[in-house]
Length: 115
Image (cartoon, rainbow, N blue to C red; front, side, top):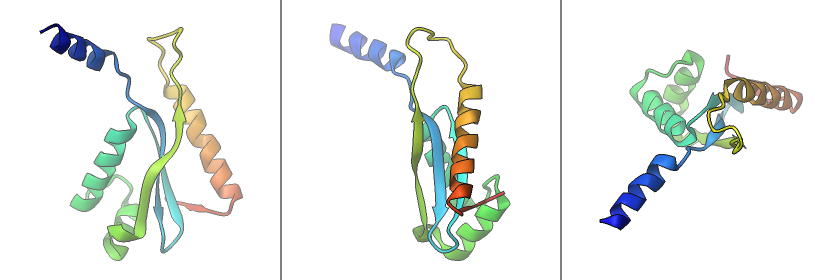
């Protein structure tokens, strides 16, 4: 029983990866970026909503429907590290700044972003 309790406690203390995900079309070379506090969840949600036809970005949804999911790459672009000294810190501003940095970088590399 102690092992089970230990595993539960370990699970409770595990922090999800946070950062930026990218969905990139191989056909149009357009990119969709999203800042998230839960990378795996955001990737799964994006795939689910795109497959369902209800993604929040209608332009991306249109291309997904037109070209098919096999022509898109979905991955983690960057991760934000936790501040161990401040466990209750809100990372919203840092994620927004990281998102803006990546948008600027991709635009400089002449990538087109989904609006």
